[in-house]
Image (tube, rainbow, N blue to C red; front, side):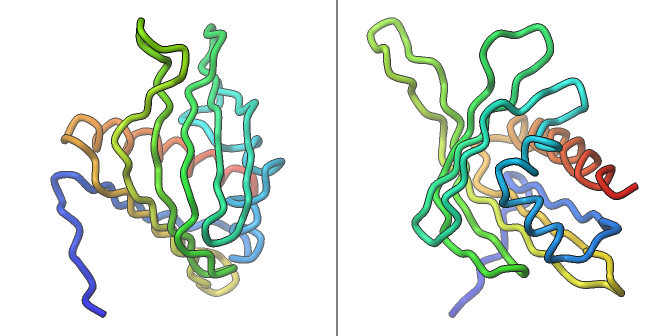
Amino acid sequence: MTQQTPDLETTVRVTKTIAAARDVVFKAWTDPEMLKKWMGPDPSFTTPIAEVDLRVGGSYRLGMLPPGESAPHIVGGVFREVLPPERLVYTWKWEIPGGSDSEQPSESQEMLVTVEFRDVNGATELVLTHENHPDQHSRDEHGKGWDGCLAQLAALWE
């Protein structure tokens, strides 16, 4: 199988060491109640929606609520690969409130997220790759968001 190199102009790659065993970090990434504790770009966000059907072909849905807003920003997708506690691959697509001719939400471009959980002397090196951004602005904004999310994840064990 040929492995493709991600396009750097449309790919975010973040590496973070978490002071917890990789099975624990994997659970924090996949358990709805744990996701609610850290999934947001900074501590002022809450995560009122966290739904996970953890299996290949299963879906997830996350809603991150910014301070002062009444509706969460919702993202969802489908798991393409689930290898506990080593690796997750899933699609990533934002739900966008419906336009004037539709009551149903529309969706953004589908992206792909790969998360690798590597054991490093009892800690976890987490390597996240988020690819297929429509442009550099999207890449940069998601990069900032992931930096904040991973800082909150790491703070669970600090």
